[in-house]
Image (cartoon, rainbow, N blue to C red):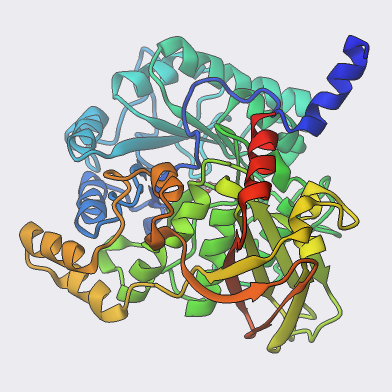
Amino acid sequence: MSWLTALYFIPLLGIPAKAVNNGLARTPPLGWNNWYSTYCDVSEDLILETSQLLVDTGLLDLGYKYVVLDDCWAEEERDNTGHWRADLTKFPNGMKYVADTLHDKGLLFGMYSSAGELTCAGYPGSLNHEKEDAEDLASWNVDFFKYDNCYNLGQSGTALISFNRYKAMGDALNATGRPMVYSLCSWGEDQVHTWGMSIANSWRMSGDIYNSFTRPDALCSCDDERDPQCIAPGTHCSLLFVLNHVSAYADKARPGAWNDLDILQVGIGGMTDEEEKAHFALWAALKSPLLLGHDLRVSNAKSLTIANNPAILALSQDPSTKAALLVQRDTNVPKDKYGVGETHVWSGGLAHGDQVVILLNMANENQKISVSLEEIFVRDGAGGIAAQNHHDWDVYDLWADRMSDNDAQSILDAADQSAREQLFQKLNWYNSTRIPYSEGLKMRDPRLLGKKVSMISAQGILEVDVSRHAAQVFRLRNVDDSNLKRRVAIKDEL
Ligand code: GAL
């Protein structure tokens, strides 16, 4: 085989293309971002109170460690040396104090700017100020940097123009020597899914999400959201829009470089519990960063029991790092008043030969959704040739062991740290700082695997009733996995 032919085969063997090499975000970042709860109403108190709540409610133990401060933290003018000035009415002790306080709690600190003249809310952006801004971030001990796309002075329109604009900041961040997760927010413009992974740890792939499951909106529109060229840099993108939009390049996710489906809408209101559960599981299986977007100071028990489900978080933090792909889409189903309605099946490979399968009902009525093993494992070989198609599978429901509302309420109400610790002990809740997800999965920790509910025979079909606007989320485990495990292991090594 010539070297040219050999190169051609490399992607088929599953060897990932080179991703950004800063060693960070090897699994998708977990944390919180203030934008959807407080918008420009930001302050030191908000960040520190929220950080303490992440610790107290056990979310840090589950891996939520990035606390990201979005727009509106700066003064409107730079100082006379061209450096940013933090708004001292909002952050009286400056930004480094915030970062250091978070670090003392075991958390990490994220900040925001725009690759433009101004940020979206009109504060100084970093275009042509990359060096001094990266230096400021490093001197404040920042760990994560979100880089937006507003006021870009027309420097967009081709992949190369946008790439260069975002690379300038990536280079400046690297030059500081401080490791910072680099999170692009160019709204999917200029085919960011083809170049984001070379310079950054994640890239937003659409305009801003909003808390609607399916409602289309003029602010987030294009003729066919499944067309990778469709650009919707607006706001009010529904979950359905985001999912369809990312479906054409969900496979671009890889260690250190993730499709960012935007901040979670769980707990914000406006969606039902079933819609929020579906949303959370899909974002986890698609390997989006999972940044909680609700106000933790008024958190309710139900939102906590969505965010703290270790069996779903284990999909996000699975060491195989493959994202789930859309393997079935049916649009011939009852539509809602907007003329929208479809069902999806998403399927993705997990470590140890397991598979996540999500049956999603975005139709306007309850639906029976069927999917064959052939479709579930199509990524491993079309036409039923995948080895997995010839095995029996146990089906585990990943929401079955969700924490009860009562227990979640007791955590929220606990008087002090020792009361909380007793509760977590009593509940035997998963703690990823003690047992990382990769270890828990290797040991087959039952808290990560859900509850067995059925079985699929070789070459069989999974058929499930799914309520309107809901998803069923399953982990498939090979019933008799000795042969297959060996094959999957060999493939993973390749
Ligand atoms: C948008 C961005 C949002 C938020 C906002 C702040 O462009 O997509 O996530 O950061 O700006 O002004």
